Length: 419
Image (tube, rainbow, N blue to C red; front, top):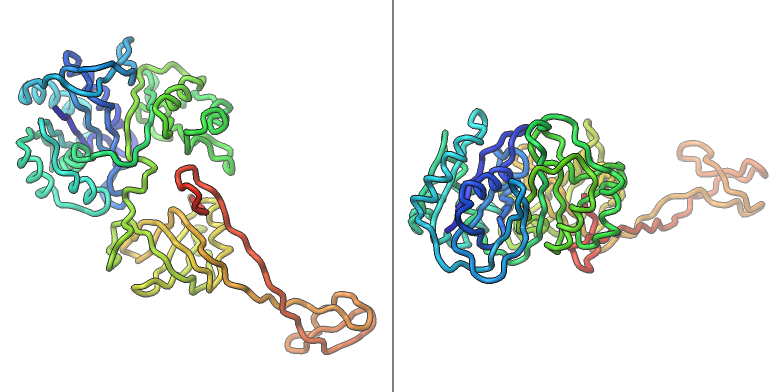
């Protein structure tokens, strides 16, 4: 029996993953089947709050060996690989809709909850993570599998709920989310930055822990939500060990999620046209020099199979903009990113340099008489040697060799640069 929900938080308060822990509490008389799911959907949708994440848990009568997956109300949470029986869907819905009603931030969200025995077809997930789909379509798919639904306001959260239930993990990662004591919500978080900085070395399968260029952790939110921190990685056991290694304020509860984060599921790799509000892998040749515009954003134009496309590295990407500034016309690259409508621009997430153009740089020549480096004799007048007075020397061309490479943990051996 799946229980899926989305769009219950706001940009500054609550968190849909916290709702998952409350749904586990509300259904405590049944067992968790498999790990709770945190499913990120299309990051280009205009109405997302923060990470555009939906959640899904499954409950039943567990069979097999239990596995640790969290802690709630002072007791360990476990999950089972399979179920030997399922509860009544109406009873589950009756337990869950009051939880959604209590915790949803309805002044700025449109919550949706779905409960059912059979999940929608996986195609719904892939469309929801790569495109913008209609709520009516998501509801139709839920009705096909006879799922019960509950909604508030417009109920747009049913799109994410249906997609989270439809996800069949191919590539997957894991995240431990630790939550704060209720009285500390909204206060500054106390998390050891030194411990976070050591995670990459101590727990190699984890990723996106610490921004060394900025000198700060990236696992700690900046909003007033209940999350204290979240550790992501490829190994469920290692992310749990990593979370335990972090000194912090008291952790009131924690939960291990299976997730599609870090999988690039949202990237459309095969396309005939570039439609805004989706994310693409494009290949082409740089056709303009990168330029910095007000706000610190760096823009350049990329020649693709469907015409020139403006690409941008925005100011929050910080040091990544310096890499983009090194591009030159003639460089051939692959770029991944979200295509925005106005202005029509690709917001680059990752950059893979396929080949570099040879760039000629005009340089002052050495004096043939004394061997010293010459200086300009004035606009259009060539170069002259200030020591011996030789004049009219032409500039010489030299080649500028540039190298771009930065390995990413989840990109195999592909040489890429990421934000």
